[in-house]
Amino acid sequence: HRYVLKELIETEKHYVADLGLIVEGYMGTMTSKSVPEDMKGKDKIVFGNIHQIFDWHKDYFLGELEKCLAEPERLAQLFIKHERRLHMYVVYCQNKPKSEHIVSEYIETYFEELRQQLGHRLQLNDLLIKPVQRIMKYQLLLKDFLKYYTKAGMDTEELEKAVEVMCFVPKRCNDMMNVGRLQGFEGKITAQGKLLQQDTFTVTEQDSSFLSRAKERRVFLFEQMVIFSEPIDRKKGFSIPGYIFKNSIKVSCLGVEPSVDGDDAPFVLTSRNPDGSVVRFQLQAASPDVCRAWVNDVVQILESQRNFLNGKSQLSSGDDTASPLIHKSCSILFSSYCQSTSIVSLTCFKLHGIRVPR
Image 1 (cartoon, rainbow, N blue to C red):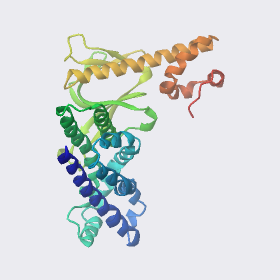
Image 2 (cartoon, rainbow, N blue to C red; image 1 turned 135 degrees about the vertical axis):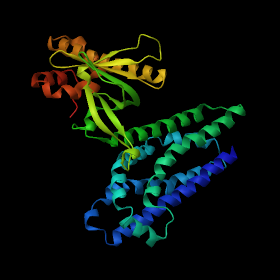
Image 3 (cartoon, rainbow, N blue to C red; image 1 turned 180 degrees about the vertical axis):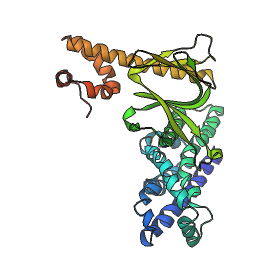
Image 4 (cartoon, rainbow, N blue to C red; image 1 turned 45 degrees about the vertical axis):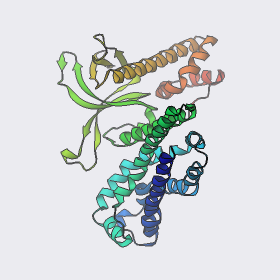
């Protein structure tokens, strides 16, 4: 286990040094040297919150990891304790697609001049991907550590929790990077609630009697909406992989039909149109586990919606027993009904002691 710890510390030192090349190199130079006119003000998007990440790892986290050499049992707690702090990587990853777009415009010109001036081997885009790679790497090193503890018959509870944390944070990072790469969606993506699932499916669309041919789609399940998008990649002439918006279903129009022909069969999401017609989207995933997870989450969302509407109708008829129902599902679904909710209803919510989202 000392070998794994040493690798963790050594790679952390290299990582801090790489971040230093960005913060003390590029960022330091750009504040004092002339920046191209059309680049002015874009540095905040290029670098995101990398300064915050650099300072924390350099001034605190590296030192804490080094202390673990003498006390290895501190390692798991170190990651568990800083789960909230590590959310800064989610913020970094959310900004990453915008950053990549700007960097790709200047990578052969302005940033190449800076690279040569600074004497760096790596280009700026190779350095800016380091935080993404690093946050993914911690879980692998912790899993190695966990293997040793398991073999040695030692208590693994805290380490398992640390692995869980360091699997969850990168997943959120990856989620936010993918959402950031979605193009052509007219609405506000942040208004769709939390991202619950995202996967690639083979999707067949059936509108009345018309059946489309199966297409590959990246599908995002938010609390308020399902979004279907088409993956675009470098092969099609795009420098950065991304997704083009194709279709969406609001939760208020959503229905689900679980597969009936066994686990590996596709499931169906339905969209109810204002005229009463229904469009069916048949989704085939790469694995049964993905299908199960999606169906479970969609069913939960629809359950919350039903509870919300039941609670609302009971509330309008003056039934006090409605409030627990509303408490349960209000946070998820309130915002989508805000436009249509009357002042009287809002007053009723306040009378029941429910905090109305602003």
